[in-house]
Each structure stands twice: as C-alpha cells, then as structure tokens.
Length: 313
Length: 300
Figure: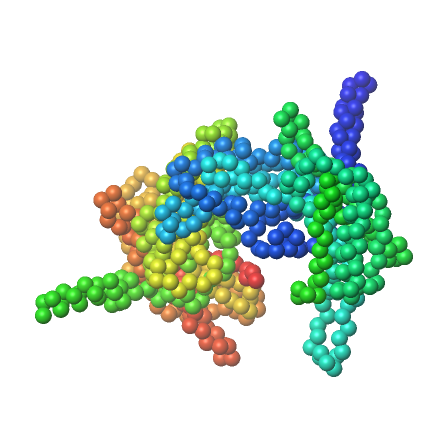
C-alpha cells in the first residue's frame, strides 16, 4: 500500500504544476487558427522570419541576421557543438513556450544549418549564419499544433540572435456574405464571407515595458478603455460596421516568463489585460472571443489595428 | 596580315564552343529531357533506400545516398563535440571534375555550383551526419524557376558517403496515369566482377543489345498491361545509341568514362491521338545489364 502512495503523490504533484498555469491565460480561447496576418502586425514587410506560439509572435528581421561588420570565413565559424548549446532554449524560454501552448513541451535538437549570407563568387567573404532547428515534443504525449519546429538563429561567431517578441490578440468580426446582382455581375462566384480583424499588438522587452514606473489600476483601465473606444469609433465610421457593439468585461494581470535572472530563477514580465467582449454574442449565445488591450504597468498601450479583409482581396 | 589573323584567333577563341564541337553537342536521348521532363518526384519514390536529405535528381541523373548507416548505431552516439567542423565537411564534399562534367553533359552547358548550406542533421539511430547542398546556376544564363540542387552527405567523422549514380528515363502514360521508368545504376565494370575468377566479360554487339532491350521491354509491358488493364500499351523500336558518361578522374588527371546503351522505343498510338516526339529509352550497361524497369503513379 505504501508503495502505491509515492507514485500517486508524484502524479498529483506533476499535474498540479501544469494546473498552475496563470489563470489569465488559461480561460482565454485558443488563438483563432484562421488568422494569417502576422506579418502585418509585426512589420508590414515580408522580410521577417516569424513563428507564433499562442499569443506571442517571435520575429527576426533579415537586417538583424546579416551583420554589417567584417564577415568571418568558413574556417573560423563557431563549432557546431557550441552553437547548438548556445541556441538551446533556456528555462525561461521553455516556460514561455509551455505557458502559451498550455502544454508541457521539451526541445529536441533536429539540425544545425550553416548558411552563407551572400554569393561567394561575387563577394570575397560573404559571411555565414547558423540556423538551428528544434523540435517541440509534448512530454505527456498527445497532439501538438503547428508549428512543431522552431528555428533559432546564431551568428557565425557563436552569439545567439534572439527573436523580437510581440504579445498580440485578434478577434474576427464576420461580415454578411456579399450578395451581388446577377445582372451586374453574372460571373460572380461565391466566396467565404470576409472578416474584419481587430488586432492588438504590444512589443515586449523594450525599455518602456521594463521600466519601474507604475500607474494606478484605474489609470490603466482608463487608458485601455479609451484606446479601445477610439478603435471602435473608427470601426463604426470608416469600416461602416455599426452592428458590432462591445462591452468592457474586466481587467486581469498577466505574467510572462521572460528571462533568467542572475540568481538562476525565472524573471517575469508583468502586463495588464483589459478585456472586452462583443455584445452580439450574448444574444446568439456563442462563446465569444475576448479581445484584449494590453497595457504595460507604466501605461503604454498596445497598438490597435483594424484589418479589413475586404480591402485586401 | 599576320596581325589580323592573330587578332581574329584571339577574338574568336572564347566562342569556340559555338562551333559545334561534337563532344559538346548533346545526345538526342539527353536532349529530349528538356522537352519532356520526367515526374517531379523525390528520389526515394524511385529508389526506396535513398536518404531524401542527401539525394538529388538533376535532369535525368539521380545521385542517391543511402539512409543512415546501421553500423554506426552499434557504438554509442558520438557527441556534438567530436563531429568534424563544417569547413572539413565542405572541403570533402566538393564535387570533383567528373561529377561536374557529367552534370554539364546532361544540361549541355556548364553550371556553377553555389553553396546553399552546410547542415548537421541529427538522426535518431545513427547519430549525426553532415549534408552539403549546392544550387546549380547555368553559366550562359537562361534559368527559370527553382534551381537544381546537388546534395552530398559526409559522416560525422569526416568520411565522404559516395552516392550511387543512376541514369534515369521516364515516359508518361496519361490515360493510365502512370510513368514508365528505366533506372540504370552507373558503375565501372570492375565492380561487377564475380568473386574469385576473373571472368573475361564479353561486350555484346549493338544488335545483341537491341535484342536484349526489346525482350526486356516486351516482358515488362506484358506485366504492365495485365496490371493496369485498359488500352494495352505498345511500343516499336526506334533506334539504339551509345553514349559515354564521364565518371571518375584518375590520380594522373585523366577523365575515365563508361559507355552505356540506350535502346529507344516509340509508343504505337491510335490514329485519333496526337502524335508526340517523345520516346522511351531502355538503358543497358556496356556489358548488357538491363536497367530496372518499373512504373510509378502520376502525382499532380
């Protein structure tokens, strides 16, 4: 009997640590799978390598990856063992991945690719860059959603090139299907109803998000509500989508594992989540996506954008 | 007058390859590949043992590296620290003059090898392996689309994994939704000597090669027609040609070639079907070994 107690206790201990995912991420809906405008939120250009895990976009621009200083020849690049060790996600990175994926994952080394940055026939020393691919494996088994492989960059000298991180949220508003006049448009083919996406993007890790100055809770909430109201006014006027009404739900605190502190413990980044919900959902009784306006403790509000699919097709 | 002649020679010498040097004029069997390119398949659909990350198909040549070597897995997995550095792998994997000549012959123009990447891949069973990948760019231009890539594998200890080279031909059967394929492994005759005795192998004559080709295709078509049903597929003999393929450079710098035979067949099509210039080549080695004949389903 006693022998059974020990493994039972261990099982409960393990599952408790997973259940300790902070509540502000646990009761949110999954990030909509049909959202594919990540590049718009991050830079608007296509020269970024990005991947998204949950509500965080990791992005690396080409200029960050191509050094301007003197290039290193092939014989002098950092050895592969060093490169792989340096690129391995540390405990804080893993904690962030686990939190956003709501799953306990481990990283497994897949391959390390040394890529020349230019044409060696045109340029004397084009320089190199390492790209290390890690596979994300669920510890308790089960399915994993895309992406299951992430690519991390290391310079030729062996210094990691970390991705920029953005905290985002997106909610889609479905517009009625266009009903064309068959006399005017005899060749019209039925397409999917276009959507309007409300997006909120906060760049993490900048000086502003790490400053010590804190505003009071009411001030934070006011800033969040004001920014949201401006966006909704724009939605109603410019996009002519009057039927979408929103109401304020609540304000929550969110804590993201950020980096390893000097004492070996994980240092966290605090962000406020000011949550809104569509009023229509209450009538139709569909579980509504919560739209979050992110506000840092010192009052920086995330950038709010309206992406109208009607403009883009 | 003399100066004029010298000048003319100097000015015109770079253009000597336009003269129609008979060695550079492509053989019609290879040239046909430009008009009728084969199926867009990964190598291990045709050669099941090939490792897709270090095998490649360039025009009608296939370079197939074997998958992970099982013998390495008996020892404990080497650690990343003992793997040879990237530069060593790159130098070892550099394609020699014979490979470049073989590829140029198939394209009927020289190509520049541009380094794409040197990657270290972790295989579960056999530890680590380096793959070196080049993309091919035609010297005289005229390129569209995705470049061909030449891939070679090097073990973690720095040994080159020499790929098997195959000459390949395919013919489309759109009504049956299949490709007919002929795959000949290119190797020097010494390799195929029987153990023990040094058999003096007789090289078949052109007529004998033709007969072997007809017989092999006939047997193959019987099997294909029973398997596929529908309209029976029939071919008639077109001609039989030999080509020399550069395979190896000797230590003294001389290029060694092997000769292979291609027995060409044209499909007998009904009167209502559009005529095509396409033909199917059954490859045979110099000593009469017939290539592997098989069908592959069409994939869109």
